[in-house]
Image 1: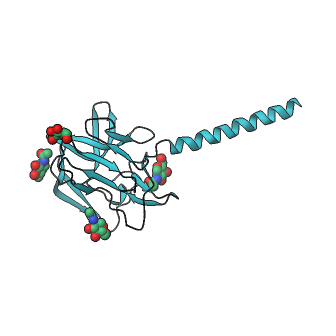
Image 2: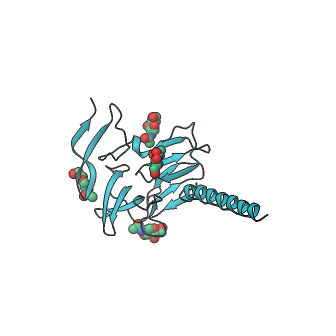
Image 3: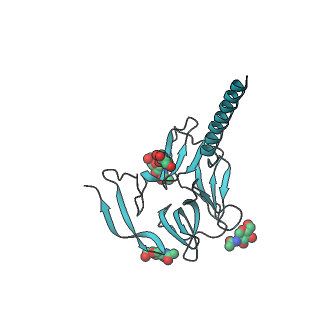
Length: 187
Ligand SMILES: *[C@@H]1O[C@H](CO)[C@@H](O)[C@H](O)[C@H]1NC(C)=O
Ligand SMILES: *[C@@H]1O[C@H](CO)[C@@H](O)[C@H](O)[C@H]1NC(C)=O
Ligand SMILES: *[C@@H]1O[C@H](CO)[C@@H](O)[C@H](O)[C@H]1NC(C)=O
Ligand SMILES: *[C@@H]1O[C@H](CO)[C@@H](O)[C@H](O)[C@H]1NC(C)=O
């Protein structure tokens, strides 16, 4: 009898553990209808480890949208930038993961710009800032419909593949992510 209760208890602990592990993987998923703002509320979405963040970072007199590695409390290294040659954004810009699965930037003037150009056949159901530094949009069965790793700017990270024909274009400077003068290309 005691043996059976111990067995049942073990089974219960194992089930609980599995459930917690499953929840851990999904707790950082970003749902449609979420948004970010440079100044109010959520400014970024973090990876589970907290090392990488996707969101607004300060650039010149305003903000840009990108991914950075938070190396320490006061040092971030930007590894990807959306629409890098656009002028800095004002504090009124909003980043939207819309209810119909689009990742858009709405400027102060109300203009909308696509951040993740997903094929119209695939609707994104979740977004995730992965611990590898890859920002991913998934459909409802967890196929990847868009990932920042396929659209590199000036950096490639461990696990990221630079496809044939793809380029890395250096930034103007450490504080300006616009396209600079140096290109690296697979030939
Ligand atoms: C970044 O550099 C580009 C090209 O030199 C320039 O046009 C732009 O104004 C700079 N942006 C900032 C925020 O300094
Ligand atoms: C931001 O939006 C608010 C309300 O629409 C407006 O009053 C304010 O002037 C805007 N700020 C900037 C910097 O454009
Ligand atoms: C999105 O991708 C399509 C096809 O690849 C292209 O024709 C279109 O110009 C792209 N849109 C933006 C906003 O980049
Ligand atoms: C997400 O990160 C995990 C490691 O944390 C890695 O094994 C996996 O390949 C990554 N997924 C994508 C699509 O980058």
